[in-house]
Every structure is written in structure tokens, then in C-alpha cells.
Image (cartoon, rainbow, N blue to C red):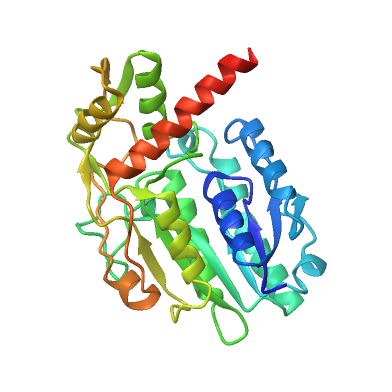
Length: 319
């Protein structure tokens, strides 16, 4: 076998895709996931079962905030730390869960990694939510202004990681921007839009549609994450995005075109904690990771539509 790693959040949307990629590249992967209630654990467990079919994958179910990890980490070269509690809106109602899953879990992982003396590098999955409504395009060296408890906990965990980076343990933080594609979380807007469009239900749109997002296709996010295992980026945060922000009303127009039907839109007020715009500067990603996004929004949306359409057909067949 080749290299060894631990992937936290291995049953999640990005974590499962990353784990599959690493297995394809002959890594030995230990996946850790607690199957929390952040969204339907059935999807996570199904992904974990798929990964477990590979002979070089081992799964551990544990709460990262208090699990004994030293023995697990003794033979690990790289930790891809993707575990965490996602979602902006719920963070206003359930802050203790966000602090437990994002801040406390990250601090405990770092303590256990240092005590084991084994991992060479931790690649931490941060978020564009650390920027809030900062000046665009968002640059890593500029200020961060989170406007939600979720963004605040991700930034605190990121700072903890980067402060721990040194000669014995290198840490790099990847700030993901709105990752989408097959397997996307059910609480994310694009998936909800597509599911409603397929079913002919009204789409609930928060805001007037002029807000924009820098969408990142999941395989592009995975590519950047794999590259970060060896890139000269220790002690730094790095943006991971498409670099091409798109307004939500343009996304809905494209979705209607791809689905071949008019969409029913129900407008709601802007949601608390949602940034009006996100836009990434990718200079650091290009220089340090050699990363350039490869999948445009039309191609990525088509792939997610195909995946969700298959999900609907499978559910009907099962019923």
C-alpha cells in the first residue's frame, strides 16, 4: 500500500468523495464519523457502507471531541479534517452543538495528534463563512468578518489549527466556497432548488436573488484538498472556489433551462447570517497548490441534476 491518512467526517458530502479519491490513489484510509444529527444520518451511513467495501478503508464511529485517538493516529501521515457541524441558520439556535463539533473537536484532534507524534500534516476544512460581508474579492491576508455563529466557530477552529502549525506538525486551512455536486447535503440551497424543480414544487428563495455565490464543484474541492497534503502552504489559509461568482437569479435561470421547465419561486426575506455576496481570490491557491478549478457551473449543475433524478427514480422503484 501507499500512504496512510485519517479522514474525519468521512461519511459526509465532501469527506466521502475525498475518501473515494484517496482510495483510488492507493492511500490507506481510516475514516472517522460520528453520524451527527446535522442532517439525515441515513445518507451518511449509506456512504460509509460504500466506502467500507474497499479493502483499504477502515471506519471508526466516534465523537471527535472526546475520542481516544492516539493509537489511531500512530501510523497516520496526513489528517484530512473535514468533520464539523455545517449550516449558517441552525447555528443561531444551536450554538453549543456548533462549538462542540467545530471548536472543541478540532482542539482535541490537535492535542491527540501532537501527543501521538505521528501525523506530519493536518489539512483543515474551513469555510468562506469566515469572511462574512468582507470586501471582495475575499483575500486570505485581508480581514475576516463572520456574521453568524457558524462562521465564528469555523474561524476559531481555523485559527487554532494554524497557531499549532510548526516543525513537528504542519497545518493548512482550506476555505471552501459553497461546494455543490452529486451527494450535496440536503440542507443546501442548490440541492433544495433542484429537488423542488424536479418535483414541480415551489422553490423558496431567501432574498431577492441578486445575492451571489462563488460555487465550487465537489471534485474541484477534493482536488485542492489532495494537493494540500504536500503543498508548501503550512500555517496558511487558502481559498478554494471557482473564482466566478454567480447571482442566484442567474442560477435559477440556468436550472430552469437544464430542467426544461418554468420554476415556481416563493420569495422570503433575507435570512440572518447569510452573506450577500461571496467571491474568492484564487492567487494563493494557484501559487501554493497549483489549483485551478476545472468544472463550470453548467456542467456541475447537470451532474447534480442527474444524480438527484436517479435518486428520485430509485425511491419510486423501492416504493
